[in-house]
Structure formats: C-alpha cells, structure tokens
Image 1 (tube, rainbow, N blue to C red):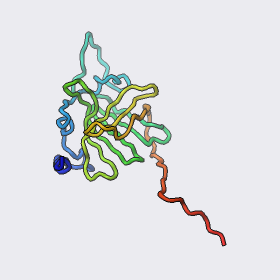
Image 2 (cartoon, rainbow, N blue to C red):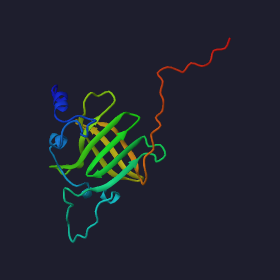
Image 3 (tube, rainbow, N blue to C red):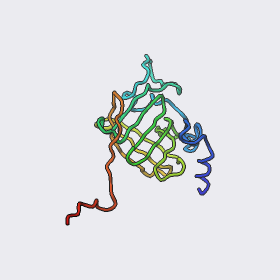
Image 4 (tube, rainbow, N blue to C red):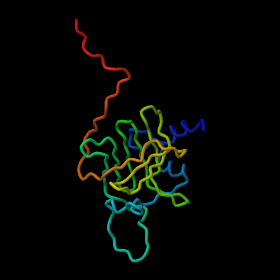
Length: 184
C-alpha cells in the first residue's frame, strides 16, 4: 500500500496533458473490471445512444457509446457536473476541488459503474475510484467512492443540461469572522 502513490504517479502521462494520470485502462485493471458500452447501462435511456432495431436480447458493442451529454446539480450555478462522452465520464465537484475521470465497465459480479481515478485539492496524485450512477426521482444520482468503497461525495442528484454549463459560484468560507468597521 505504501508504494501505491508511486505506482499511480509513474503509471501514465500525468494530469493536464490529456490523460487521467494513470495510463489507459489502469483503473479497469485495478478493480478487475472490463470496458463495456455505457449504452448497456440501466440509465442508457437518459443518454444519447445510437438507435438501432434489435430483435431479442442484445448488448451494445463495446465501442458504441453516447454522444456528449452534460448533467449538473443546478443549471444556473452548476457546482457539480458530469459529462458523458462515448463511454467515458468527467465528473467534477468544483467547489470541493474534486475531479473524477473514468470509463464505464463491469466486474465479474456484473457490477457496472465508471472505473477511474480522482484528484482532490490536497492530493499530489490521482487515486483509483469508482462512480456509480442510478436513475433517481429528479435525474441521475451519482456516488463517488474511493478504492476502499468509502463514499467520497454523493449521492448527488444531477439533471440533464441541454446547453453549456455556467461557471460555478462557490461559497466563500472564512475560518474567523470578517472584521467589521471600527469607529472612533
């Protein structure tokens, strides 16, 4: 376990240069999962998957995925967003400084979710994590878990956005009261 941060740092091209920081497929292997199409997910009807006529049970080919779809917690002030493109996702909690990048996959026990890595403001390297998605009463509910299965953030209900996201306005928190004016 002590070498895990070193392995994660050396495993790929690093964040900020077009990669997840851990190399293609690393998270899938880490969790013992295999890549599959997000168009096979229980919530695929909420995505922009290619339509096809199928007689009988069938699954979407691994390379099929959704056209880009954006989900936000609040269309006027999206502090949390998820962008699904093909079978990949970028999930961001802007105010918390959390970013998850992953790929839809399945494990041997048929547990489907996004497998990837996340970073946080106080992390030096990306660490393995999973992001589960389920249909909820007002959109899709997202839960980010670390490699140990502990919840990092969520469940958060996000609704589909049919436009562009707006920059988040994060609350300003002060550790001590803001001094008021002094009168003499």
